[in-house]
Image 1 (cartoon, helix red, strand yellow):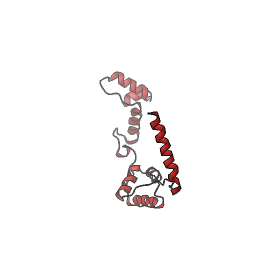
Image 2 (cartoon, helix red, strand yellow):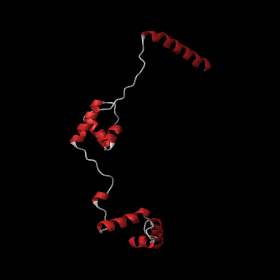
Image 3 (tube, one colour):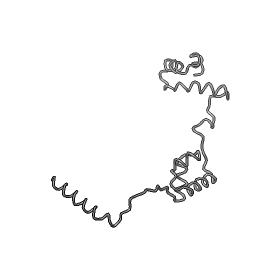
Image 4 (cartoon, one colour):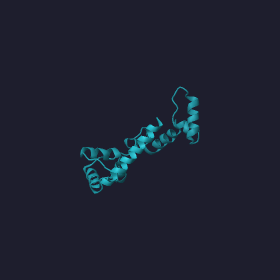
Length: 138
């Protein structure tokens, strides 16, 4: 693959095309793989990936992180899991696990209209009007 990348003068798409023509029985690779392999060879002298190159960086769940999450929830219980995760630079799943283990749930304050005794007659009147018009059509 490295030789094909050189033959294509560092063009990953052209190298992929050459690779596909010469080795039709092999699965087609990504055009970026050629540059990745070249970079690994230059930097480390090997084609194999190091453990640090595998996936996104892992954020570890620590007692300090748990304390920070709980402190933030204590200050504002309606803060969303995603907002806390964004501030703490962790996945929402970690925040959710901390909340779940502490048997906490975020809640959102919803303001509703409270019913007063004076509201009862207009509501009854509306129900009668509604039933009259619905059954009038049937």
